[in-house]
Image (tube, rainbow, N blue to C red; front, side, top):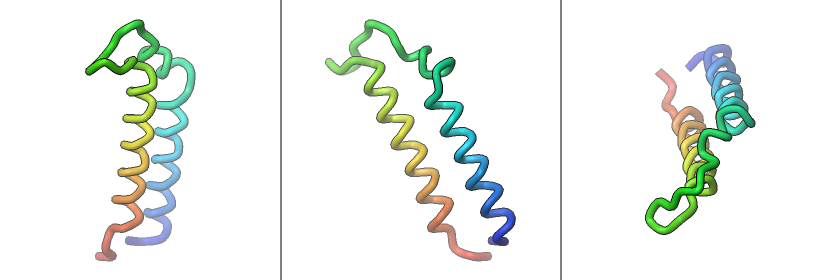
Length: 65
């Protein structure tokens, strides 16, 4: 992958992470609800965080074309 394209994808992933883990969108998960006996808010935080890490790993471990 070209270095410029890779840096653009990393920057887009960073921006998506900032948006997903910032107040207006994270407030959507702040409910008094249990999912499999766990509170929804921390479960959603860890799920979003894990998805961002997985996306970063896929992006960084991609084989060059």
